[in-house]
Length: 544
Image (cartoon, rainbow, N blue to C red):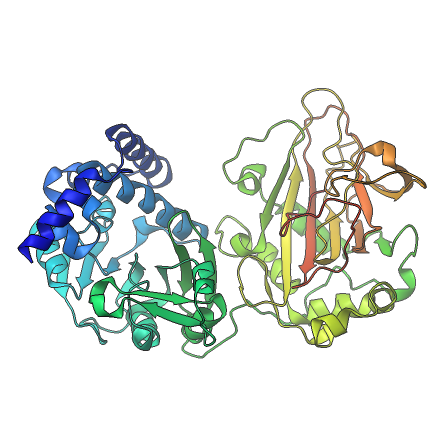
């Protein structure tokens, strides 16, 4: 063993890519600034104390040899902690208000140490005796560190922790123990608590033959084995134990963010409210109202009952909530989607109920029924390609439910004030080819007379569209076909197609914000291909 350690030391000395001291200082300053601005707390002295850094002999047994380098040890911890804290706050959770936090697979304490600024009681556990011994030595007076078994259970009571994180642990747990450990962490997590764990990027499993959706390498290396999953197999294991799941690729590995349901009953991962008793903004719409030209759409004035509209208008969130800390800019677009809105305490209960009502399966089916004839006419083979009836697609919240077939979203949307010359926030364009429908409900301030109407277009005959980007189409290629005035309580909805060209008219200089509520549905397959245009990649925020 001694000879192996010596050989690894020599290899480490020659290894490139270690973090520089300047990089470490940069990430320390970034984390310190994040603490202060977000939580009003300061760094703990141990967060840069060299005594935290394990010697080479410990590092090689616990994590990786480069973690014996102080700059690498601390800089990677600073950076990854920011990632974890950002994800927590996006899910509406505040570590400054938590009572207990567990790092499952604590290693050398490289991440747990960065939770010392908070008041929560800290816990760490690890099945590796080298890890438990070292971290108990460095953090034992500030955190409870336990050596645990390779298999469940953990030595904690049910519902102990507000937050559990597991960095590079499920990447090394044998497949046979994956589900038992997910269930065990769910057990010790409080209802409403959050678990964030990292897994190998899903693309890596494609390198091997894995018909069952998982693969193990280097099983003989024990703690240093590698376990890979397909996204579908991983979510199949995790979903029964958590209400909310989000899978988010990161620079290093992929994060699985899971929130434990408040009740003990297994429920769907999507917030549900009955459409009954809740006013859908389609409640006045009829199929006969749909105009066919220049593409299927409908416009409804006074879409909501006046009393409900006025309450919603009065409680429309301030611009800074929707901008999420970004600068307003001059006539810029800002969106705030359902996956985050539903966890934001600054959003009123009335608005959250309104969002939820438009995220239900009932609302989706209402929209599909409304446009049923147009869907069939435009896409006669759609259900063949979907391999099921469009009404039977599994609904879920976009950017929230990874298994949703019909990904529904609602958004607060604003266009910031026009501070300079008159300009259009968005010219002629097409939405992503996987979007089925769009709906907009305007919340115009009655004092705002700056413009910002929705415009529909047609392509001019004979124009060469080769190489044109469908997300930004030159106005010379189109002619205006219709205008929908930007007016309070006006609903505009349309079926998406390769003919659904739309944009926003120029706004005059104004101090007012253009405000609206948006609904949409993305499908798992593109509706059409526009071969003469540059294909739009991925799913897009919808901009008006």
